[in-house]
Amino acid sequence: MTLPTIDLLLRSNLIFTPSGLIDGHVAVADGRLAAVSPGAPDSRLLASAAEVLDLTGHLVAPGFIDVHTFFVGWLAEREGKTIDDPSLLANPAGVRDGFAAYQRLLHSRGVTTVKEMTFDAERGIPELLASLQSDGALSLNVHVMSQPVDAPLDLDTGRRLDALLTGPKVRFSGFNIMTDGSLSDHEAELLEPYVDGVAGPVVDWPAIEKAVLAADDAGFRVALHAQGDRAVRRSLDLLERCRRDESGRLLLRHALTDLEMTDPVDLARMGRLGAVAEVYPQITSRRTHEQAAELLDTKVGPERRNRFWQRRAMAEAGVVLACATDLPLLIPDIPASVDHACWGRFADGGAALVDGRTLAPDELLRAWTAGGSWDLGTEQETGALVTGLRADIAVLDSNVLTARPEALAAIEVVLTVAEGRIVYRR
Image (cartoon, rainbow, N blue to C red):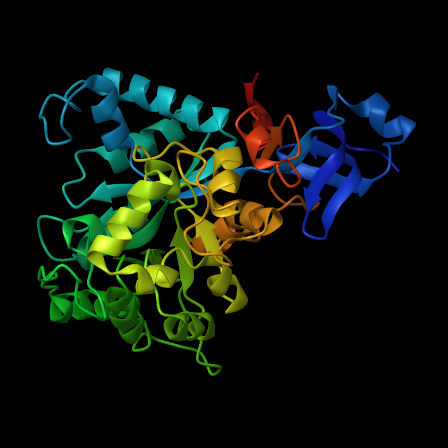
């Protein structure tokens, strides 16, 4: 039998596969995973490989998937401007250079796919992505999601973007819809009142309902941004009115984003519906233990602490989790996300406010990979190290699955492969 020419051959004792870690090798040919197998590669495979890397002691994982990023926000921060500054996107060459730097940053963190936010005033970003794809300058896989801000959700916008962004590197992924806002600003919609007596937000649920049902009927998925437990409940009420199969599960991959505060009853509903949870595993890096405790206790009271960051309950309810950063709010950092979402630590290293809310490291790594691909509907293309899938690979210089929390900060991405091509090497 004639072997294919192997472009890249990776050897490691820590290869993260759907069945767990294996000691073996990964072969890449023509942008695909030609082999993911235990044991050493045979002599013929070695002889056919253009490049062989011994990554013993390094964790070889699928490329990471960030399901909430915002290039324009990142560019504004880099340029020291506001996102609505007319000059921010005025120079097309400068914007292209900015996106190239944005790609490099994401690849340096092992990210190979993103769900990228654009507002309804798109300012040329979808056209930029289509142009980069046409020019062969797009190494990220980008799923564009439109967020209505200046006007109600417009199905014609969805149809236009769906026709413009036809893949394979850039596609339209539906609509992001805001419901409530931040707890710290009293903008999270709660099932019970704020303990400091401040009124909560007034959410236009009839308008949101109209948008969600129209999008679902037109075949567009939605991601509902809900932070408070009442907003989560109302969002699920709407999703229950969307089209479902005979088992009661959603026909489209609708998602809830953020889910800072939830009721376990609603997480069980979410699991039954098949709605995806887009969570922010690094979010506790933004506060110390004391600051988080003060925020929760002064806004909702210590007895409601157990409603926050319930990723363990989500997983046990059968909810598929996908990971997001809201870049530039956070920069993707998988070792840091293990520290915060698995060890439960805050920015100062302080312990979790409530025990039993965290994920196991392997669950989190699956959320960064397989969970993201499920969310984006690309599980037949990427998200796992399985023969035949796209060769999107991230390599960390140590094993985040077993590292102690004090060792996580030193772990780095050393290699990123996007569709078989090395796009980052430390």
